Length: 145
Image (cartoon, rainbow, N blue to C red):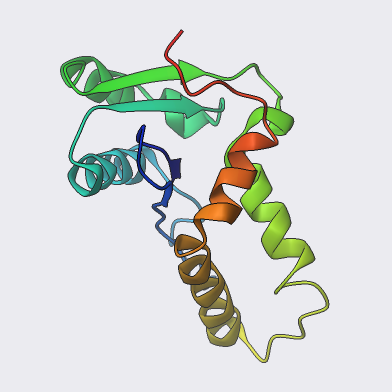
């Protein structure tokens, strides 16, 4: 999640879910993971949050909708069109990773891949110029509609 607060540097807040192929193991984020991410962002940013979200099914889960409604005092969500990666700032981050540190990577195993991704995400957290670039390339305004 690329976060911006007026007058401050942008922040990257993320959570990784590692799927190791075990039976019954979750393969992706579910509603409660998105709720935890929003809650963590609220605590880290210490202020109201305006989220611009794509239409991933987990974002539209009933429990997520209830969470959004019950926290309207600090949380607003604006939905991107159905398929619009060009205006989703996080897509710039994934493209940066795929064409950078992950390009031609021959990972020695899952643990190596996880370390490489975590290191790259951690480095991106300390690159406000990079995060601003992801936002700028979308053309989105940082002003509420």
